[in-house]
Length: 324
Image 1 (cartoon, one colour):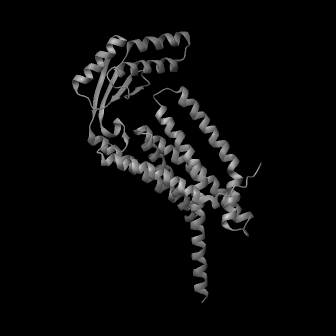
Image 2 (tube, helix red, strand yellow):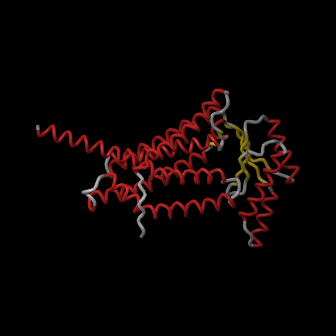
Image 3 (cartoon, rainbow, N blue to C red):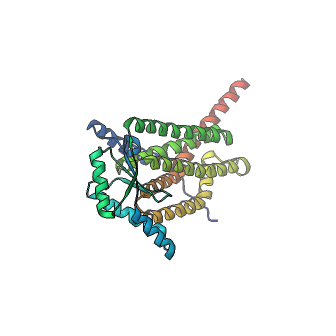
């Protein structure tokens, strides 16, 4: 396997600056929105409250039955049906509503908070375009529930980060743990910043994608750290930690590139052909996986080197002091 000779650690200031500018840009934009009394992020219905309609469409049931008999793709039919519903909602300026299909072939429509009259207009428009429909349930998500979901999401992310820090510190040493948590914080903040810049909707799917990204990033970081430890302990003990880290990163670079390209190509295909229902989730995954790979190479490792050197200096000082 070919070993590259890229100087990762020597280029750390460039990548630190690049990441800092990206994060600052997103948070400055959030601050400007706050000053203008606008939502700092594009919060989804799950977080700000809204209305949910659970509907059953006999026309969809009939199409799916025919598809089963003709052995056609159910996925294509449901995707096209959801697109037709979105076109209907566009006439009511509700094209950004979330539309999902359940395993029972029921349709869930989530919109901003609407009164009873507006909900009746939705039902009337759908009946006009699709014929008879059955309203199974209408729910209202209050702002207090949305606030509670936001708080729980933050606590979930903080708990995951703390747990991963403890695991890495136990699996390796504390210096490795600091490097890993720096990469995780970078991924979370950078993804949030990009969501702010491009006004990506923040919903429960976004949080799920974020947690998936943190796990992917940690997996990549652990593989790199394992190679660093192997070279440090067994092979290159006479070299500096900077050279050992550069060597380890270059040794794992081909694997890292192959892994991330495989994941990103798959996500691109799903973004193009997967339909609107899961597109935002996939876009966040795409952004996060790219950032996770970047942070494993250019954030976690330089931070680890810095704290490793600090720990060595501390140990050296303590040794000299004890001898005196």
